[in-house]
Image (cartoon, rainbow, N blue to C red; front, side, top):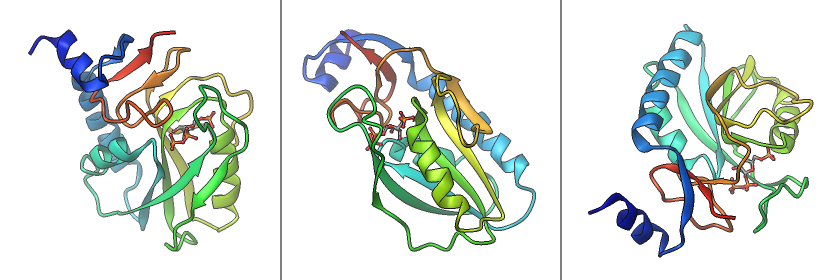
Length: 185
Ligand code: PRP
C-alpha cells in the first residue's frame, strides 16, 4: 500500500501535517535507551513505572530492550482532556499497589510538555521513599521552566507542535499510529 494511503486508512482520512519520527527511528532510539537504562542500574530492585495512557506502547517496547531483571507497573494520570494544552490540573486516576520504598523507580513518560505531570508525580513518588527516582521520557519539548526532576533518559527533543501517535493522542484518537506525527492545524 502507498504510504500516504496507508496513513489515511489508519487515521480514517484525517490528514496529519508531518511525520516527526518514523517507526524505524523510534525503534532504534528505544533500543539505545534500553541499553542506557541497563547500564545505569548495575544492581538493586528496579521498578519501571509507566504513566498511562500515553506511554503504553513506549513502555511495552522499552521493557523488552532492558537486559536486567525488573518489574513493571503503571500509574494513570490525565491533564489534557480533549484539548491541545495542559489543563494544569493533573488528576491521578490509578495509583499502583506496588511498593515503592527502597526500590529504584524509573518513571516512564511519553512526553514532557508543560512539566505539570512530572512535577506532581515526582513529589508523590519521592514521598514514598524510593532508593532512587529517575525519569525516562520518549519526547521532551524542553519548555518546562522548573522541572522537579530532569529526565535522565530522553528519546528525542520534540518540536514545538502538537504530536500524536505511538501512544500520544488528540481527544483519544491517533494513539495507535506506529509513528509520531504533528496534526494539521
Ligand atoms: C499527556 C502526556 C503526558 C503529559 C505531558 O498526558 O501523555 O503524560 O500529558 O504533559 P505535561 O508535561 O504538560 O504535563 P494526558 O494528560 O493527555 O493523558 P494521557 O497520557 O492519557 O494521554
